Amino acid sequence: MFDKFKKKDDDAGGEMVEEKPQNYESEDNPVRESETRETPRETVNSDLGIGALKDKRARLDEAIDYVGLMIKNLKDKRTALEKEVEDESVDIKNLKEKLVKVSQYIDEERSGLQSLTRKRQQVETEADEVGNMINELRNKLSGIDKVVDDEGSIIKRFKENRPNSDSL
Image 1 (cartoon, rainbow, N blue to C red):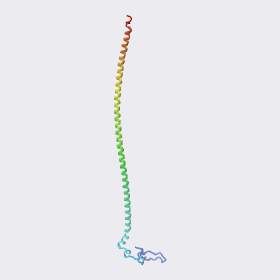
Image 2 (cartoon, rainbow, N blue to C red; image 1 turned 180 degrees about the horizontal axis):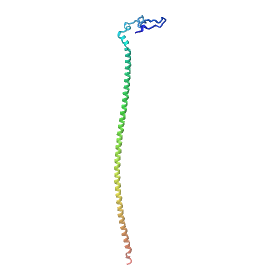
Image 3 (cartoon, rainbow, N blue to C red; image 1 turned 120 degrees about the vertical axis):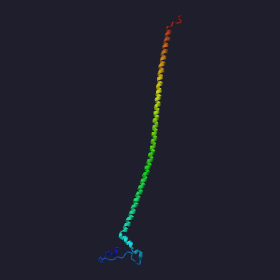
């Protein structure tokens, strides 16, 4: 707007000269009326800094787009983390189920071993009873054997003390 009052740097002594607008009419460049005239609205807009405001708005739009992209990236990362957590949760649940089964197996084995211990104790008790019966029977047989030995000795003495039937 103030371009027409610019100084011309030449030997003319630095006086202020009005410059021609760049949209001047020549044979090579016919100027259209709509191109050379500023509307009052455009003049007001440039005086008020509307162009700068529009530039700021454009930069803000870009910043908002960038922030939106950052938010999308964060959402993608969060989604990936949620998936990883879910996968880990499934793996841990599977491990927990396996551990529960192992625990049940251990309990069953412990119960089985306790049952086996009771059965072994019963067998040992029966074996002790059988051993006692054998000892009792051995003692009885020893008693019978002593009786048989004693009777054999009596018979032998009797035979020895008996007069010979040949001598008669």
